[in-house]
Length: 178
Ligand SMILES: [Zn+2]
Image (tube, rainbow, N blue to C red):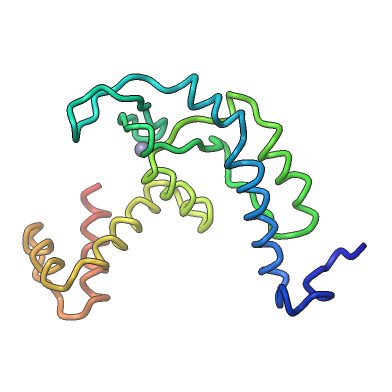
């Protein structure tokens, strides 16, 4: 048995990071995405809500972070505590445990947006608020330049000419106004 398949099979995984990524993906898809405990969380926490798009009653739930209601397909199940990493072979045990030995108290429903922000915050060691600001800045940066200009004008800022300066100005405004 080898503890470093990436050195024995470099034609398959030419780096350790690629091997670990394959392993993480396999465990997530095979164990976590199909976890019956996760389905149980959805079953116990879901409730009937009015879909704002159709005005019809459907299954949904409440995001434990922002507190808003969402239809079921916009919700995900999240480990309330911490992101679980699998970057080293020695992480395998704890990672598999985190995916399988979970109790109902460890999990809750989260909307996709909050989930992304929380993961970003954990990955980069930021607070949720900092990550939320960064996400808004990224979304702003994806707008075409004219849309960025009108957004800045709308909030009382004279739009700078470079994309980076516009993002910085928007970030500064968010930090002051949040
Ligand atoms: Zn949310």
